[in-house]
Length: 405
Image 1: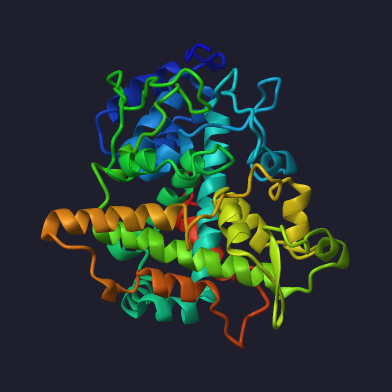
Image 2: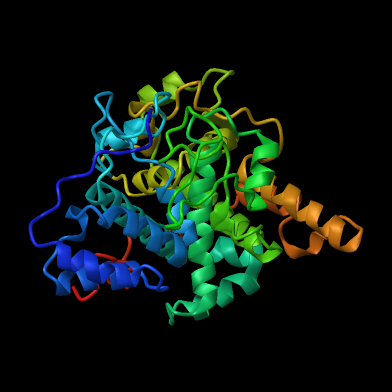
C-alpha cells in the first residue's frame, strides 16, 4: 500500500494561512500555538493540505511520546474508513488481527484520536491519584509523595515525567501487546526501551519510513521504533513506567473483583484449565494472567473497564472478545510483559554501569511486585469515576484545539 494519502481539497482563502504557517515550521511551537495561528486567520487547520504534516511535525517536536503513540496508526473498517475513538467498534478493533492503514488520512481523524488519547491519559492519571495511595506508598513512598507535591503544579517536571511514562506504556502495549503475539519479543522490547529507531525524516520532521511493508502504523515504520524514548530510557524513567504499571494492575484487579461474579461467568470460567479466574479459600479471584492480558491491550481498554458500571467488567471484556484464547498472554514467570522488560533493562544497565546486578532495596524486586499483586485494603472506594473538577482541570491543561475554552 502506498504511503501517499489522499488529501482533502483546500478551502478557499487558505493561501494566506499557508504563507504564515510556513513561518511556524522552524519554531519550537506547540499544537496550541499552531491552532491559535489557524484561528486568527479564520482557517480550520484540519481542512488545509498543509495541516496534517504540520500537526505531525509539531507534535513530534513538542511531545515525542504522544507523537509516537499517534503514529501507531488509526483503526479502520475493512472498507478503509477510520473508526471513531471510544466507540464499540473501536474497542472491538483493539484485538483485531487485521490492521490496515486508512485509505485517506485526514488531519481531523488524526486530531480526534489524539484528543481521545489525551483524555484517556487524564482519566487514568486521576484514577491513580485517587485510588492508589495505599498501594503506591507501599511500593515507593518517596515517588508517591513527589507526585502528590507535583499535583499542585502541572508545569512541574516531575508531573510531566509521570505523563511521559503513561504515553510510553500505551505505546509499548500498541507495539508489543494488543494481540500481536510479541509479548515475549525481548529483543524488540529491549530495542524499543533503548530508543532504537530505523527511520529517516523527509526534512519536515514527521516522516517515518518502512522496515516492514506489513504494518498498521502510519507511513509503514519498522517493526519497533522508539524515537519517543529520546535515545534510551534512564533508570528513573523505567521505574516510573513500572510504578504506574503496578498501580494499573492493582486498580484493574480491584475493579474486576469489586462486584460479585455473575453466575453464568462463574460457570463458564471455573474449569481447572481456566486462565481467567481461580478459586481461593476466600472465594473467587481473577488471575494475574487475565489482569496483565487486559492491560496489554492499552490504556483505552483499561479506562473502559475501570469506568464500566452497568455490567460486570469481565462480562464487558468477554463481549468485546478481550478474553479469547489468542489474546491471553502465556505467563511463564511471576510477572511478564512490561514489568519483565523494564526489570531486564534495569538490571542490564546496572550491570553495565556498576558491574553488579540491580540492588533489591529500591522496591522493584520480584518479591515486592508479587506481593502487590495480591494487595487489598479494607476502605476501597467503590467509585472509580474521576472527580469532575480534576478531570476538567487536567483536560483543560492538555486540550489542543481550543485552549481558551
